[in-house]
Image (cartoon, rainbow, N blue to C red; front, side, top):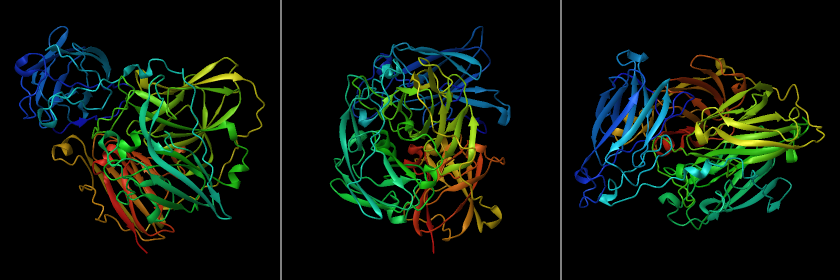
Length: 619
């Protein structure tokens, strides 16, 4: 497999990924048991399958990228391989082997439930895979990209069970009503400042009907309350940390709150090591001297952002101004924030977090903390502020009837004019401000917001049900806000940041790095000068996408793999998806604030596993 391109991690329209943990029993008995505290097990498991075309199946056992291989042969073309138990394996379908860079290797992840067989389509090939010997009990199919521990492998030979993922979480879509996060009122106001109090705590909430799920959220909610702020009015957010010392998923209770997209002083940015311990309170001051936009706040604790966000630590922060108010856009009950997330639950309703270093994905799609909800709309225009709040999953949003919708802007606020699209891809942390017009749909009709990159339970996001006719006085302006275009000729320097890692990186213990170095909060990796423009080049030398997010400022995209950005991405942004083996160049101005900030991948488990770099804006 050396020298080949490996398509690693993300789902696509033609590639379905599911997981296989080939766990067998001691002495081939078909069970997994304690091995005397050594943390190992004995026995073998035989994997067999069938493909419709010529292919080679290879496996990675976490130490050897090609621990075993089998070539499909015969009619029908079948393969079989025997593997030691006591490890988790990744299976790869290798196509066009020997064709150099044109050869492709697709991850094929299969779960096990006794004898588990599944037919999948990978680049046009139908593959039947199954664990046929031994008859494994206690296993379960798991969602894409989430490694599964085999019982008895970890914790010194302790017999641990595989978590029973609740696949029924998405079996009855559109039966729950969309939750709209409450807008938090200020606890006090002055002529210049609005002050808010937020209490971070664990709480039991009903996400799956009839079951309670323990989360940790701001004011005990997931997502947390929405903050609506005004440009030019300072906001002071007082965060009291009511978490225990060790909280859900085994993560520490310390937090570092970050206003994502906020142009704030270094001291207020939520640097990953500027922590608020359990029992303490921290006041963050946000000047709001930036363009109006859809921002969000979330925890940013070094090494634990993934579990903290997974278990609920996120909320909207919406910044508006008088200019926006004068555009006549849908507002009030017709302006709805939507945070899309994916999660896994066990049979009791408990959130399950595996800590996959490749990125955590779930099989249940939530919108505003509700599994695949419905939302009753009038036959008129609505404005939706859409946030991809997932740890790792990418979405391509589209309406099931194929109708157009209008993109007003992305993370940094308005585009010069609305852009008509039929679909839009959002990587983790990206936001889109969109208008959907339901006026052409008759009362009683429905349209589904779909994820074109999803399969099965992850293909549908939510449903809009038209239940009434209303007069619509809102506007869709032909022009929104002029864009100050940054000129590459004015940049004083170009810096290059290489994002790398993945399977090879994991062999050395540090899976994800920038410029070959794991994150060190005390090491300065770049020192842009205050008030200057720089071009930053992001080079992705791995087989997974990396949504890059520099703190402190918004930026503009110069090019993606040498091509201009699409019209939807031609404005201000704070996160850009860097495709596998691709290159993105951005330009940005380091204005107003000196101090320490970070650049990182916003696949949260990549960030937690060292794909982050410190940069200091110097006077």
